[in-house]
Length: 121
Image (tube, rainbow, N blue to C red):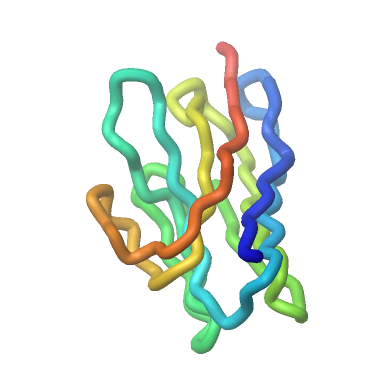
């Protein structure tokens, strides 16, 4: 019934851009967060958007380079990633729940399957 479908990942050179999409099916009025995890590293909160208040939050590592947004129907959330760096390489996941960027959060009720991002030097 509930599904989050991510897309937009791929391989780019450093300095390039990607736009990730998270399409939500079977739910609405949830906060949406983007997290990423690289091999051997802890999950990292990247960005989240609070649907009711239209507030956005960013990790220090991506602030100024990434932009999170949602469509008017609040069914799809986007993560525009500019000026990509090799350290941005990871699997990116979107979650639906309560907006937080804490790595150990259990505040998200649903998760997508992840989309791979690779940034080469």
